Image (cartoon, rainbow, N blue to C red; front, side, top):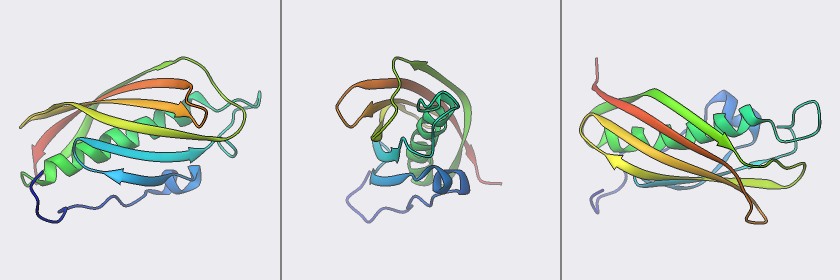
Length: 134
């Protein structure tokens, strides 16, 4: 991105707010956000895999939207996949989306979700299509 002020700022959606997401850093190349485990657990008391996927999709999409905005375009998700490595019962997780490809028509971001103790819990990859505003 250029040295000018960011043209776009992340605004949390309803699901992000319900999950307790907090954005720490934002750019097309990297978005970092945290989420508490508490309030996002499944019936066995573990962090819900779907919550991790939702968090991963959110940070990857935000990065794509920031990149798209620099070209007057919008980003729409076309693929998301996740590998769950571990889970957690307590604490906070951090999702870091890192750009793998920032093109004129597609973006791809890898999102690593890690527990506060540094353990990788999930790896998400998201691809977004960049389209002209209609």
